[in-house]
Length: 397
Image (cartoon, rainbow, N blue to C red; front, side):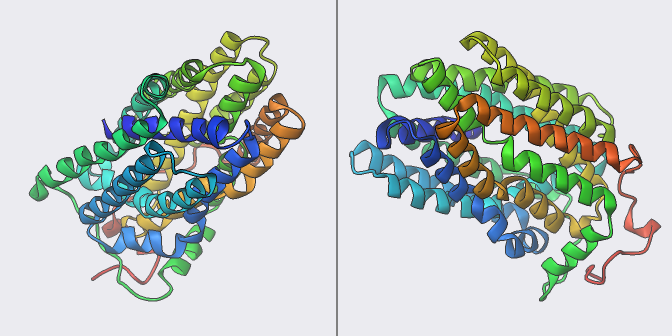
């Protein structure tokens, strides 16, 4: 329910910037995305350490409450007609800061709920839940915008965070599987970087994530400018396109949940398929052809993202997971301040189809990196600490 509210807000925010606060400016939309994702990279020295050192349930409650309050505040500004573009910029930074602390702990909390044995399937099912909301949220947002206005979409999202807080409060704390905690101290983020630097598999995965996260994950720009500038769609049709792509991500998450464990080869074919989907979308002659291409993009994108999540968590020592996953989120989303304005500028000056071409090129280059890795499927699940020596000195006694 709360994820549905999140997608309702994302769609409404894009529509607010594109059609109310600007005259269809893809570049302004790119700036909003850049400001929202910049904290993922800027706050990396603290977000990963917080996930490794803190009580994960309590930290999640704090971040979710903060995002709910921000959504309510933006909703009030919009409903009262006070909202301006710079307000959206400020809230994008604040939302991004809360999400920067939320994302790594939310991902590592999965292992605390189910343990390492069920980790790959749990990650995939968690992604499926998120993307079912992605399927429903944009379509509902389009209907809400048309029926009662953009501001109410934000208010509904703010109220939805109460569901998350209630769920976290009601968890059986005795059944949780808390991981080993890293010792607090200076240099913990640097230790995480050193750990990753010694792992060629992690370096390649992060490199692929940077390319795809920087130039391919700008879906609000791609979908909105194609809907408005090329196919001249209204709010309902725009929301439907987002839901169509979400249908592809649900299929991708179901396929991922069927695998016993992710493999490096999955990254290769999914990034290649993602590039082909972008090429098809760039040349789509009609609204429905474009929608069909979005389904392919959704399947490939979700398969790639889930595989990187499972591979990095299973092959990383529990005491390092928070920092490694924070680095993963920072690399995947922190490139948006670079890529979103570039993609928005290309869409404004060369056309939306050329912007999709940028995404296609990035995905295909990522696939080439996977080919150059050569040792495909050499990543093995994490072995318990008692079976090998710790890779870093900060493991708690």
